[in-house]
Image 1 (cartoon, rainbow, N blue to C red):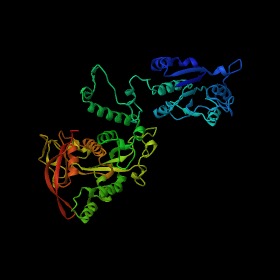
Image 2: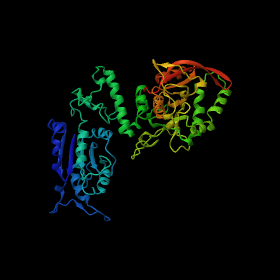
Image 3: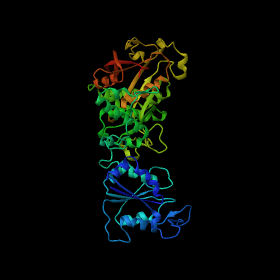
Image 4: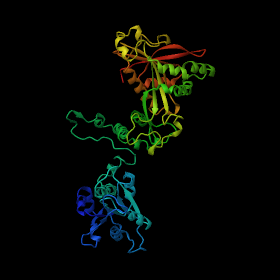
Length: 505
């Protein structure tokens, strides 16, 4: 591959004689030639610019000077019938173009000849790009980002290195190109470490010294997902969810993105307290999800009666107004949208599934919710002055519903509140995406802000025939501790009671 770089500062490019690019030139893998644009001028002052047409600040680089220079590399007015090789590209760095990407570099690596026109001042006369495009030249305008440099030289160096390193033989170990940032996986690279094993009190993650290559590969993949979600959420929203396995979906969920069933790209989500204005949407969500937890023999009339009494719009309005109830939701969208709108719901490269957005929700939809009952008196600041924290009667929520007052979990007796997790539901398309763990973690943190006990518990009941739910709760750290009879409409049901320590992650 050959690069011809045209600039008013050709000496700038001596840096390309160093490192891998320099070695590639010495080995004949790459040919880089730098040219002074002023060599194509014919006036004593070697003028390459003039004032902007229409007025304004600064100077614009002249099309006639650039035309003479580029014709020597591309053909043009002096040779209008000379075909330009299809593998030749005219690259023009400009802050008004879209940022250069790894995909761009991969495409450019297939070219045989790249001519880079380095602008200065206010840029190159726009007719230059227009003319050579009409001549059949592939014109590639690019920027390095959303900022302005004094000229195109830095961007030219970046292009030579980014494209050149993809050429066969350029990089000593081709495997180095496989897992790096912006590669085929569409992720930033995972954190890297080397000796010493301990440096200033900081250790290399143990998994990297385990010798378990499978565990190392999984760790690196999950770290790449987490780093990309944190630093470049726009890249996460462009991932194809079909490329993610269950473990990776859970890792992605922990970083605030869900790979929803039926959605091509991950969508940003967050856990937060429910709003008083969301009673109707919560009731709709509850009516959709509650039947999934019911045994098949339970009548539709009994289910409908239960929903009408406990999960109606009025019921949720009361829950949201009562400080003893804590309603937490899993909602679409970023909790703190970036000024660059990286996390806009449904926008950008990710094109999140619009069918999941509720009408009138202003771009936000609820994917799941939890409904928790605090013990009497446990309502935020008031909790500090109430109870001994040793598990007295006033610290129990839902005692008349079968609360496991005397249960002991993991050999650690309860000392403090016993909270009831009354409802924990997700929409069907969010299940299996890691949403369960994300919603539980947010719920647990919300509850810990409201209680004071040294060793509080949380409990729930689920139908004895609902094996799926029981397995899900076990994965969240719950333990089966007892049973109860629970009425849905006029029908009694046998439930398994689960409990867990709340302060244990």
